[in-house]
Length: 212
Image 1: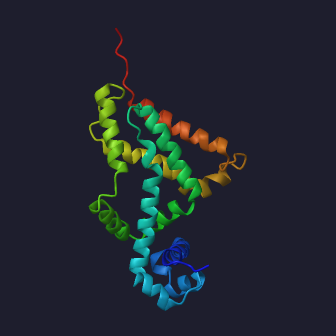
Image 2 (image 1 turned 60 degrees about the horizontal axis):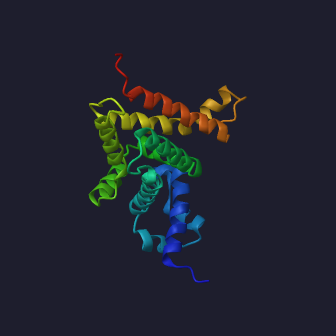
Image 3 (image 1 turned 180 degrees about the horizontal axis):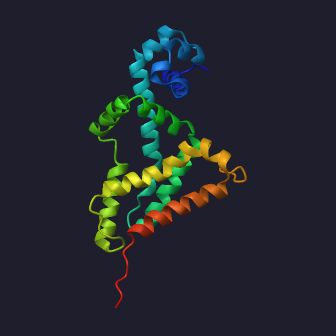
């Protein structure tokens, strides 16, 4: 079977991501990526030109894969509670299936985050970043319907939502030794986690009924 360019690029991106997760941008070497991907360094440079471009390609792939995985959370006609539950399902499923993602982003942010910012600006400029704006729009619509309270700055809710989802995956290696009796990887615990986030966030903004 002849391997296509896209298949070879995909293989290189997967290996590069592993190396960048392990060593960060500064510690990663193109030669190691080439060796682990089973290609020579010249071929690696043929596809991606430089370490900066390869790293940016990995970041872009991760961002877009994540965005696409949660993009179907927004279904016309459903309540914000339903939207939030679907979003939490999609978000946690994606991180469970891509355990490297939180660590990779954490490494990038620890190195200043400038490369992630550049990639994000590119994605936004190309009109491929819809999910955060969709969440904010859903908050506004739910407020207009009277389902939730008016939120002066919806970005605050968005930041709290994302932080609540991501922190567990970053902190798990530290938290697990504190509570060895709990299986943090069990589906039961993950469902409890999603329910906890839902209750804290949704009922924190749900419109209160005014006593008659």
